[in-house]
Image 1: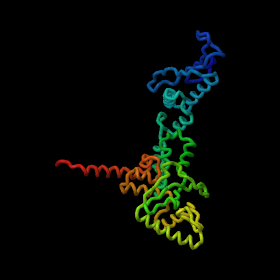
Image 2: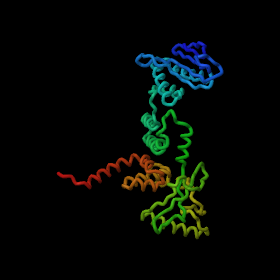
Image 3: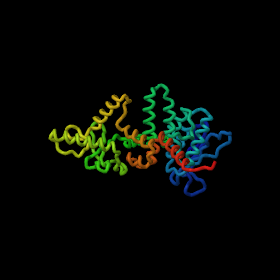
Length: 348
């Protein structure tokens, strides 16, 4: 039984008293002055001891206080099991102490239904590992693709968020972050003499129509160095392109890679060409964007400093680069430790 505003309400496992102190003192009841408060008796502790009354004050209206009492009784009524009700009561007290708010009823209900610990927050990164391990009836190729998407996209953007706090806006921000884009190489930005290319423009593709624009971050606007073989290949391409352009009577194009009309290559065309090359080489199909990941892994495996890899890829921080390529980086750290130890001479 518990009392609300002097009215006895039928409740079997809780007792509450709602009081509004009067302006004249002496504990008088008043319907017009002060704020509302309540005291509610929760189920006993796990050892059977009685809890202190749950006291809450500062409500601007009777309805506001009454609404919270109803929310608490609904939380306690999620399960008829007495031990579960004790755990829910523990959670209510702990959450109010930390946040001055009640725990989310939908989250508590889901945790009770699935047998999760009520006071534990599971991060999405941990949940994804559990989810992937539970996928028993999928092919190895599908598993590798899932694992790749989890490692490259889901964990870096969403892994730090507790599962129960994941929102639609978080997912939308993730998709904005991994929006398909391709670096555009323009002729004015290519310096084959000094072996460098400026990445100052990108093609962003949403749907079919590509859009040109500046990189989304300052780190994306960068200069990358070229190796000797790549410089030779680009020189050969440039000479062939000039011959074909003159034969077709076309004017100069700012783009370094163009179609037969002198327009920048559409990302879909480049992707198709990549798929055919992979097929001819007997390799599994990969996305154009995966070439970035392959290049980064090869650079790290070759012992290139993480800051250089970060700059080449246009990442904002080296921490993001390291976290993205965690499967490669530990091996480098061990190699670095071995190389450092090799410089030291120990007495025998």
